[in-house]
Image 1 (tube, helix red, strand yellow):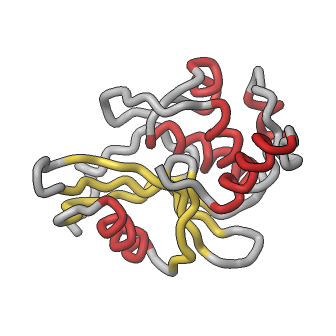
Image 2 (cartoon, rainbow, N blue to C red; image 1 turned 90 degrees about the vertical axis):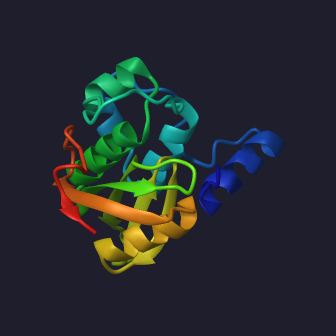
Length: 175
């Protein structure tokens, strides 16, 4: 999996020097403490990469941010819900974008990302532990993900408020 440049640099520094890059690598026991400790999008991405491993679970409903910390693992919908919630708590603009897409060998797959505005004023999007962009619109996100995933088409998409746990794209609009 591709990691952001900052995350990759932190992994290398940790391995070589034993430093944590100033990022919070201790697991948080509750959501309030996580919100207080994770101040920037890169902090949240690094935290999820180190402490919340990927594990798929079926359905269109993500764990709440509190549940995600307790369960300690999840998939794209859980990352998007957690990430967008933490950012919203710190006043960042963010919203969840879910979409269905086809691969040549497998139709009707789904993915969930978070579109957000960082301190640089630009729009970026999060997919699992990584950041991509900058982008200007939801359509840019979908086109970028289509290329990144090797999808033959994007079928439908939906945009939901930050922190949403119901993230089905099947009730969205056709692309």
